[in-house]
Amino acid sequence: MNIKAAYDIEHVSSTSKIDHELWPLDEINPKAARFPCCLVWTPLPVVSWLAPFIGHVGICREDGVSLDFSGSNLVNVDEFAVGAVAKYLQLDRKQCCFPPNLSGHTCKQGYQHSEFGTAMTWDDALQLSNRQFEHRTYNIFTCNSHSFVANCLNRLCYGGSMSWNMTNVAALILFKGHWVNSTSIIRSFLPFTAVACLGLLIVGWPFLIGLFSLSFLLLGWYLLGTYCVKGLLEC
Image (cartoon, rainbow, N blue to C red; front, top):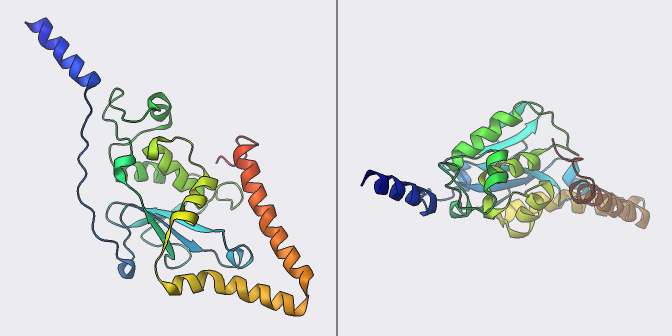
C-alpha cells in the first residue's frame, strides 16, 4: 500500500499541470502612472528627435509600478527615467511559466529556462532581474533599457520563448503598443518633424538623406548585433 501511494504521489507531481493562481490586476491608470504587468515606452530626448522609433522602455509590476534600467548600476522604481509613459502594452501572465520545481515547467524550454533562472511570480521575476542589472554598465548601443526588459521576459519565459532581446522587445511595443493619449503621439513625433522640417529648410534634401541614413544605420546595428554577431549586444 505504501509503495502504491508513493508511486501515485510521484506520478501526480510529474504529470499533472500545476494551476498557478493569478490574482486580478487593477485597472490601467495613466494619470497615476500605474500600468499593471505592462511594457511601457517613452521617447528619448535628442535620440528620438533623430530616430523616432528608438525610445526608453520599462516593465511594470503587478501593482503597476514601473521598473526601468536607465544608467550604470541603476534600475529606477516608480520613477520612469525620461518622462511620462507615452505607450504601453499589457502582457498576459497566463503566457508566463512559473515553475514551482524542476518538473513543474509549463513551457517547452524547461532546461534552458531553469539554467537562465526562473521565478514563482511576475514580481519575483522582475525583482531578480532588477538585482542582476544593479551591477550592469549602461550603454545605449549594447546594454540598455530594452536589455533589462528582455531579461525579465526570458526569466518569465513569456510566450514560451527564451529568445527575447532588445530588437524583438522594441518591435513588440512599437507595433502592438497602445498610445496613452493624443498628446503622447504629438510628444513622440513633433520634435522629429520639427528637426526634419528645419533641416530641410536650411540644408535641403541632403539633410533628410542624412537623417534617414542615420536611422537605417542604427536599425542595422541592432539587427546585426542581435542576429548576426552573437554576444555583441549581450550585457
